[in-house]
Image (cartoon, rainbow, N blue to C red; front, side):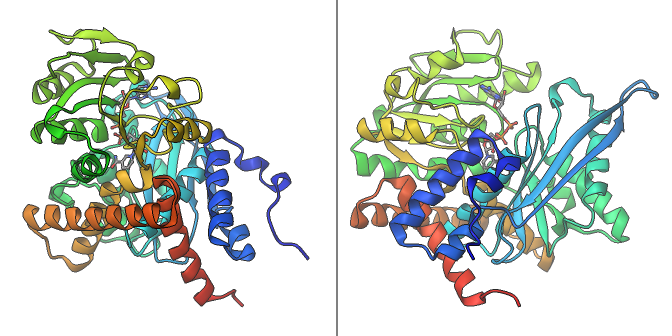
Length: 427
Ligand code: NAD
């Protein structure tokens, strides 16, 4: 009897990102001759929790009810790991796709985790801090039997931050009766959070650019950088590129983009956003739309906001020679083909943004051992892991003749498949 999950069984997970994640898995399964039972197993998440819950708004009697999710894709490799996002369009399919990407990412960089992801369908921009705190505590309470330092360890993602992680850690600790810092990563250092975690994703991504530039013949002294999204990932990627001497000519957030052909002073832009909340009205710049941003003249493009932004519609306008994907799933499958035809070198999401989960892994290890490392040790180990993963993926790409995304997926999926094969089927 066939056990594979056909399309007819997947309607609950329907979303553009899930379709693309499946298309990538199916393609790579064919390329590496993946065992068909393992392929079928990997197409669906192992566990998915869907909850709805109320939280009090500012007026005590006003209550909003929201949907929320936690999906654990693969439990074979160790505890599961992945961020939590608060966004108005979060849905089960999107969270399941992001959990799958986390599985490949952690396997690719050799961390002892399977992939997970969580999210609450809510627009955090419209919420006050006390509202976000109540929402976070209730969400954590709903997941109390799902998460834990040995089972599933959340981290920040879009719309969440260190403070949200602190509330999750506190709520979980109150429930189990003792302080449990290892239940989340991306916490403030005062609670056992790792120094350098906040910068890790952007910094890790930029650490790969010199090798990518050497491979593609881009002169870094003359390189212009464009960054889409100026949150955690985008801000620290822009800062790291600026500190390396590259000219960051444009950045954007949900309100639009800012451009200066002579380069933006990134620490000043950060200060502005810290004070004003967004990039609107920033002085000494030209304003561009987020659509125009993708077509700007540059050598390096860093999508670092939402998924599905590089599409068949805008891919042919992109002028960059290198795309380093800070966001998860920023490029659609159709767009990938256009980028390949244009010989644009793509550092795919599961490689480019793996610095976040890598330093999260360091944080979890430090919490479990109650022994904390210096910033120098953390940054050096991050660079080593990222650099090695990049080299391995580039070697697969060159030696086996695949684009970088396929090469990265081959490495990640092979590792998970090997582990699944030796563990076998229970019972
Ligand atoms: P964030 O919430 O800190 O920042 C998101 C940024 O994107 C903000 O500047 C926001 O204004 C902007 N934005 C949102 N919607 C937009 C739109 N439609 N158009 C243009 N800009 C938009 O989120 P983050 O943590 O920086 O995450 C960004 C991306 O990176 C996500 O795809 C996330 O999954 C991925 N990622 C994050 C981490 C991490 O450590 N935080 C790690 C790996 C991957």
